[in-house]
Length: 273
Image (cartoon, rainbow, N blue to C red; front, side, top):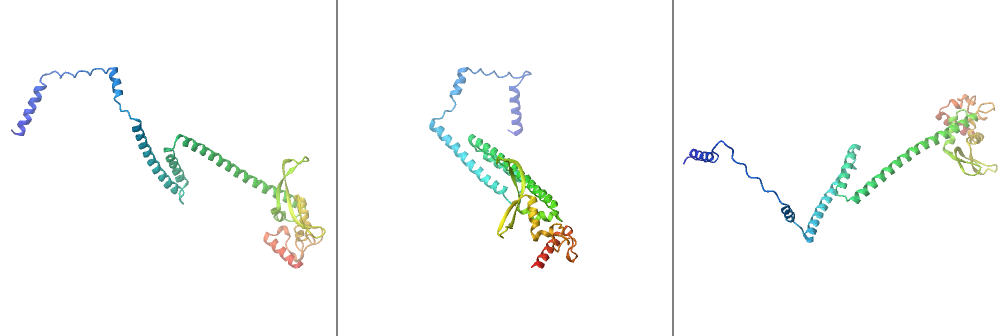
């Protein structure tokens, strides 16, 4: 029998089964499932003995430990990359987010709650540090400007040629202190005080704690600083050889630069020695 004859026989057999114009009858509907049969299906589910359940639990725990170990290794790699020199802020933020996801993936509910609390505490501490830093910056600026203003006003009142030079002499030893009331309690007000090293009537060294005007007056009485102030004596500053109209036709102090002023002071001291 040829292959063509075999195909023709198969075709005839197919036509004999489905001969006619009507479609073949539909298969009958399956019988409804009874309630007792449903209960039987439930009973056929696998039930594990306590020993079998313990074994399954141990295997799940083992798989969890393995996954956690891999996650910890990956976290270590990500931490190293995050701390690498050259990592941008955006990259660090992405790495930190991925690290946090890995940590939370295998964390228990208590661990997640603890991490959330610690995260919130850290955020509050960072905010506190930021506010303290900002407050410290503004305090330093206020402290600096307040002392400069008080010292400049005192120097101008005492007729300094160049108040800035007087401020430079006294600023390092100046500070702001809180004023106390008659009851000895702080008032919340602050004032500038200046410590000056000098000698008493017996020639012993003493430290004076003065207000700006008193400090400038004390400075004015010292011979080495007399040339910073206008003097009623003829010839300029404090009877010295510097200042307006001084010997040698030198510049008035208020017209000198800081370098010229320091050079003139050294020259004046050398002339006295």
